[in-house]
Length: 155
Length: 272
Image 1 (cartoon, each protein chain N blue to C red):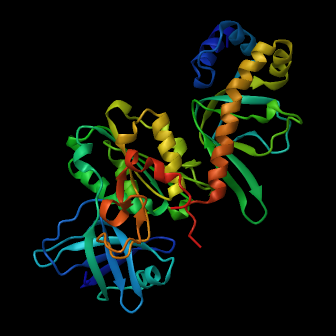
Image 2 (image 1 turned 45 degrees about the vertical axis):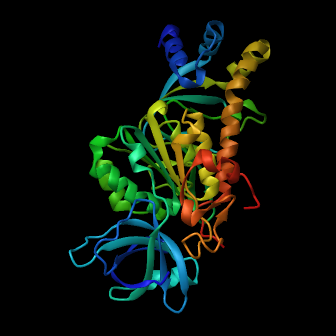
């Protein structure tokens, strides 16, 4: 797909709302369109976190495997949201599996390419951090609520 | 204050340790409002407040009420064991219900957590029975796991309707589940309603309600349009004993449904 098409898609994605034109051009140099069929994995726990995904269509289940329990889904992510934050933080390794629940269309961002651009341009790096930190905080917050097991039977 | 003797007509399992009792009251004209509660007595064991979860098929001779009970203590476990023909004590209905009149003409966002769907079920019946009076109706329901989903068949039937949006999420699931996973608060941002002309009804564990209120406020709802059902230790149910005191209010008399702006300062208080 032409870069102009990617720019239009990236700019329209809620995660990149209000993105500066020059940053958009830089980011789109690291972007490509991807699709996953239902049941296909975007990535697996332990793999190198070499990308993150802007979901355009479909839903993705984030799973961890536990002995005796099989795969447990702890979150689903849908259109308009992102999958993957481990690319930001060393050692850049996925800590869960991400599986397409139905046909998924996404923009994959090459993490190595993006990290290099963020290092070279700290304004871009800061902009990216401002977008990712709320996602991290939201996920920490929801995980805390899940850990509280508020629907559990009172002791 | 004396309970009248009522009888269980039917009993239906609605979840793990959760049973819905279809109760014949023996009376004909007790007016009930969605969100109100009755005091139910398991004879020889004790009395507990249980919200109405619906109306049964009343006849000219006797009104029938539905109560959904989770067997967690001696009284609720005894009630949950009652079968057709068994007697129980019933006092009520008590308390302030959901603001159905205030909801007319507005979008209605219902957020339920776990067993909190039961007290909201009569409100949903009310909305759907007179659907044209309301704007968009949305139910956001969160629970622990797919096995814990209450009123599953009814939820599926509602989902088939074209005039109500229903989103169900669970805190965690095995691979076979294809619905949402995540806390119910995350559904609020995706719900379709006009915050300038909407009302929210919230019921569930208090922690869940606190964070749901934050999400509703972030979505633009004002404090005076958010209603929640508060749970406290109710005993007399008529505002005399003080067991259910909640700051300056008594939940049995002034609640259980309360407007958020009136209890905002109380929700964060650990001491009450």
